Image 1: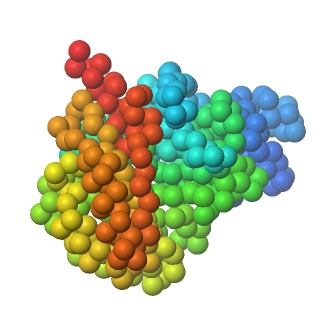
Image 2: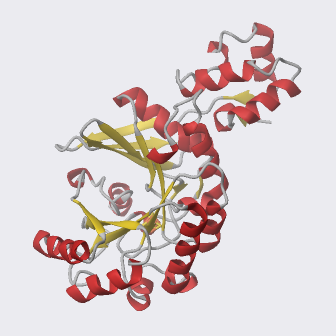
Length: 345
Ligand code: SF4
């Protein structure tokens, strides 16, 4: 029996400690040492008695660690981390700097089977879901390397809502005041639109912000670039988001990657307005980052600015996200591009 203590919420640790015949309060030390002091050896949790530490080890408890294989830093300070997981799988996380804010974009799956046409990660075969501990550990490890992380976005490799349980558990771990204490409003989950899981999310007590990777304002085009749209088409997705909003009263973000000649015309902007105008939302227009795995090109900046003003004039709060980390393939849709290229060489 090998059980990772990093994968446990504080509540679960409390239960475990009591089951092992110890006082409940000791769980707090385990949680704090793992998530604030980055300890990966049970022996280093010194507030626990020697006998209890020994018992934990003997019973197969351990603390997992992800290993930094590579760190690349772009001239805009964006840093991309390549991690090796315990079983040798690889994932990436991206650290973005915005003034004093440090946002970490974390991965939730090794590979992804959603096959979005513009995304390099989608070309990597899906290997497995990450555990809550492996998701939280991306924050722990990058923070130890680069300083306090203020925001976390679940927007790296993988579709977070297809690894729902581990993702929600990692949110609880990262948000807990005895651990990283990252405010729930500073945590965002981005999904390509897994309707049943959005409905589940609406019922959660601890609920991060929700972002929808939209990228097209009509079904035919969305299905062309995001196959998930065949299963969960736009009309149903929008209805689900409206229900979500009624239930939660929470504003949502729509992400829209601007692809040259594909989804960036005035007509597309008008269709997008029609689609989202009754939803309390903001739209992030994301400059597309070409990668060796996909044939698309990014819209030019004049087109993006025009698109943004059409939306803004219609009263839709719109932000342009200019590419960050492009030189190191760290931008949206580029994760995994480096090692896909190496695999083909
Ligand atoms: S955009 Fe997200 S959901 Fe789509 S293939 Fe890439 S990682 Fe998967």
